[in-house]
Picture 1 (tube, one colour):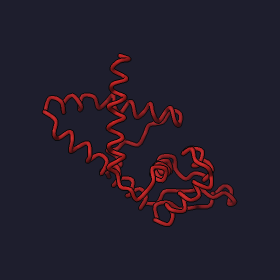
Picture 2: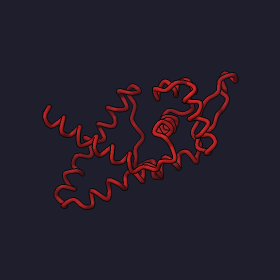
Picture 3: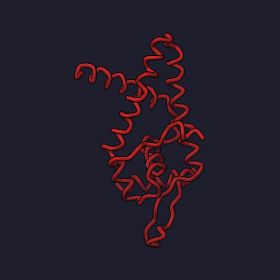
Picture 4: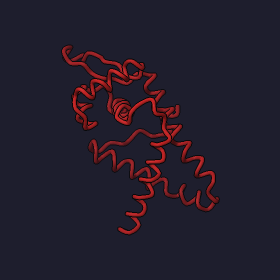
Amino acid sequence: MADHSGLLGEALFALATLAIRNRGQELSLTAVSTLATAERTGPRRLTDLAVNEGVAQPSMTAVVTQLADLGLAERRRDAADRRVVLVAITPAGRRHLRAMRRAGASVFTTLIDKLPEQEAAMLAAALPALRRLLELAAESQHGPRRPPDPAAADG
């Protein structure tokens, strides 16, 4: 299985790279990831977001300022400690993420539609394993949690 794991990993990496390359360029990957984190975890301190994204706090301040200027995120006071500022995703930010996910998915949909029916069926059969990979990735980054269901984000 180790041989297959390496080949599968390379194929998935190449596909991820393709999706990233074909995404909109209006936001950096860090900005998109920050929005996704705020969507998944709720309002967070700027310092927590900086640690999560692996950037310095001044860089995260610039990212959050850009997101706020675009109306995709907002700064809020923490109800428990009014001195603390939290960063939260806005409804426009959720819509933006949903549109980006759909655009990224369309890259794959176009390719899948070009596959012979048997190969497309093989991909469909792999869907539970792919969803489990997403769960494992989320657990390794944030402890045991379920990632958001892409189907639920469409509504």
